[in-house]
Image 1 (cartoon, rainbow, N blue to C red):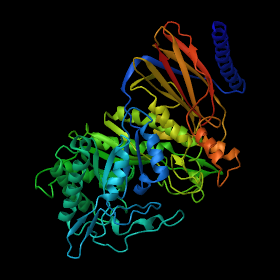
Image 2: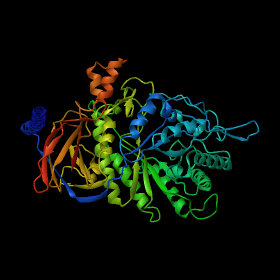
Image 3: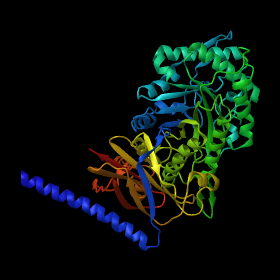
Image 4: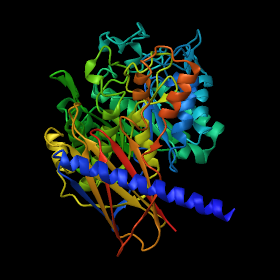
Length: 573
């Protein structure tokens, strides 16, 4: 038995050494090919404050997907990716209809009226949606909208049948209009909150976020700025009457970098601070958090996709600047209600070729690099960023890898989902990454990533572990050299440290590449689906290794492909 154990230890040691030498050899080859080594210095002794789980927020247009087969599967996975609760935001929770799921459409039939105009409340579908979240320990961002048909000032036409390739403006019908009776609207909101407290308990509902509408500065709202503000006052008053400790916020405008957004955002902010309340007649309105959106702008250049992370970061920065300009509001939580590489999740790659980044590793590397800069921007503006909603979920019964902005296709996880698994493995205290690298958040905000690659890192620690996420990102989706990375760690404990190296690239954690190797089957077999599901999980790049620590310092060398992401998880005992 002892001889068997000894032999096992020798084999394990040999495997670890082989992994180490393979990584070193790969690193040397990258240098030999002319790629300049990139040194990333991480100081675990220098805390940069909390690494809040701003990534643990997701959303989607189609609420009825929530309780469908693949929707429930994906929500279960999302609910387990970290220790923090996951927040979910969906549209159309008050829309009239039969609950049929369709692209950019959803309904719950929560409110109708009888022949005499008396309200009829039916929470069956709303409860089905929220039950699915609560059963998984998730938290709703309860979006109060859109307008029930019986309350709309323009009830016909009401339902759209949009599909990719149609005019996007076709979706804005009767559900987007103001109410014909603000008191009936307020009573609907009041009854919904009261019902939620009765069903889920006061403590649970106090942990939710209630918000009004979506992107009211564009055609999602067919009223004026003042009509939205009036609706907000009636809504906030109703929420607080039903549960005084509930959290209510808004206005979920589009990116504040656009003047058309600011013309809505700033009057709203002025009103909640200094305006005359439409309900109480007093100064100001209840507000517990502030929301806006931020999107990038990809396009096709010379036959390939070129991203524009800078556009998204400028939206975020302008939103932070506006909030910070109000002393009474600057410390409130900010939720970036949609924070994505572009604006239309349901606009598929086959119709919109600029969205061809979505299936592969460009989406995952963009996500790693952009989230790190959200932390930087919030710190620079001294604002309280609570969450950044990734507006991506899944689309039921669609062709495999059609190129929607989603996290999974037909129940198979895409590479981008593995970045969130990486975030979920990171401890909660951010530590210093030396910023003498090619890009910092200011350069990415102002220039995007158009010259050399953005090879950088986000790092965090706790008493028992540390983690470093490293990415090799570029806006242009073209082949580029591997990065030769030298990760230099200081502030380590002088005791045994084990490293687990996780990777997303063309070979690891990549169901899309696995699907293409199968010949891109339109109807994969049961065996192929099982293989794709396995490929869609986060995978280790190499066997765990023991790290040589000297004077609290150590170095890890590895090659990182273009659009690749690595997570180095360090543990000690």
